[in-house]
Amino acid sequence: MSDIYFHSWLTKHKYPFGAIQQDQSCTFRLWVTSPAISHVKMVIRKEDGPNGEEAYLLEKTDGDYLSFTYTFDQGKGLYFYYFTFEERQPNGTVVIKYYAPLKQGGQGQVYQDNAGMPAYQLTCFEKAESPPAWYRESIFYQIFPDRFYNGNPNGQLNAVKPNTFLYATTNDDPMYIKDEAGDIIRWDFYGGNLQGIIQKIPYLKELGVNALYLNPIFEAASNHRYDTGDYDKIDSMLGDEEIFTQLVDQLHQAGIRVILDGVFSHVGRNSRYFNYDGSYGKNQGAYQNQASPYYSWFNFDHYPDEYKSWWGIKDLPEMDKTNASFQSFIYGKENSVLTKWNRLGIDGWRIDVVDELPDTFLQGVRNNLNQWDDKLLIGEVWEDASNKIAYDQRRQYILGDHLHGVMNYPFRDQLLRLLNLQTTPQEVCETLMQLQENYPEDVFYNGFNNIGTHDTERILTLLGGDMAKLKLAFGFLFMSPGTPCIYYGDEAGLTGGSDPDNRKFFPWENINETIFQACQAWIDQRKQNRCLTHGEFLTCYTKSLFGILRYLDDRYVLYVINPHPEQIELRIQEVKTATGDFPFRSVLLEPVVLPAHSGYFVTSKNIA
Image (tube, rainbow, N blue to C red; front, side):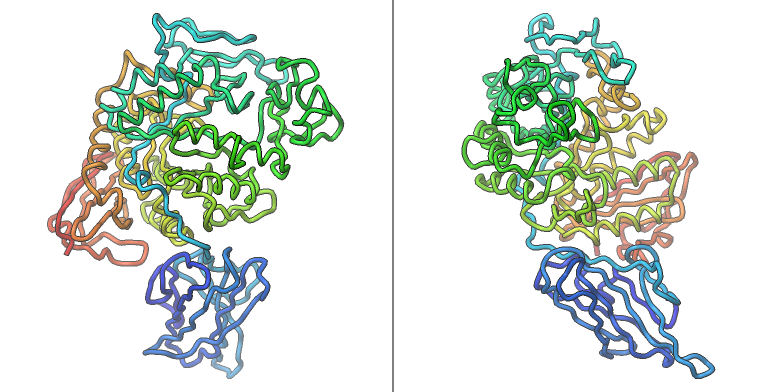
């Protein structure tokens, strides 16, 4: 340890830990032992704040510690800080040096100059995010409706769409028919529908899930339905509003919540609102008629063929989210899209590509949901949501009154790197600790966790078809803070690469019982042990092993993962955390041998 030391994850150096609510104070303490060091200052600035960069002299408090208490009175947002000090050299000259993090947080180091030097991040939030009480008790199951089950007699279709094809059997692998430019010209369907989900409620109950996240169900041309055609209609291949109401009612009777996918950044080119192909009527829609009430919802560079589209995909015209008419249509208090489906009893929304929605738009969505007592709002974010920049704007969706939580892709990324030996257990611990420091506490524990979605390759495929590794992935998912979500078929052993291979039909006649039972056992463990739903979270590691400890009152659960192809011995005296020694030595009194690609699970009522 050097003559000056600071560690943002240790409460003896920074208290309280992690994010700070606005107008609250935080105390920073540096350990300084050299008499050659003097004039130690903390330099802090709020990003785009009115005060600019501020410097405060630290004062000696106790022992070798210098401290300063700062009040975060410039409002919510990100604050960045580092330290400067003067150091007298042996020849009597005095030089200015700097102390800042090695990466973003945690332990720091001395820098000779501040050119390119990182700074510590501190997240300041407006208010805590309290999700509906049911959320943290939930185990979600994500369904891609066309690929789950057809509940009609003899597999009959509710409707057929033009320019599409149907698979001969549900065992066929999905594929696209594209033209020379790579555009999809024939969408493929299996015929899964809402009645099919109703018929499979007993299966969902057997598995143990108690909440559903449905990929888009509104009228659209594609099988994925992220190209919305009409926000007010259920897609005819899935059913109608009557069957949807039955689905919601029967799910609720079975104790299962349901949230919908909200796709508000763009619509389909052949939607009611754009109507490129005229399928919604002559002179209807923005493309057909500049006098259309929907014309102002789109940004045309040269009418009608040059317009802003999502990521340049011409099939997905981009909405003008600043347009008051569109805003009212989506989230107005009365007669809006959100209000209609909320009144039909759904339990919340997952917002697609939330980075594409301005914070003011997202605030409007949240305001609509706040009219009800128990509606959930989750956003699709792939990175650290605390410091995400989209379209040159620092996003504020986890700083209060926007999202309850975000999809926890960073946890998934670390899991895959760990199990595929692309990182070390120590690096995983430190990465997750950094995320925990950056997020407001409630947001951190509100994460919507997954090990696979419709946007990723199947987890079993990414793990090389290794079922032992998949069992470890389930353990990581259900031990993690936040709410777990299973992508349909992962519990049955589905494999597949990138889209469309990751969207196969559910293998009802070929469920892998070993995988199913492993997933089911973890669901049961999650339901039976409150440590996993409400407990504190601590990661730990040895050179080769990674562990998660969840603890609540006098109870704890420890799960240790051996990602290696050989057996490893676990000795408690070798276990470390991201901040030093493992504090709960009594959880393991004797060494334990973990076979290759295995996990060790232990739970107790006594954590002393």
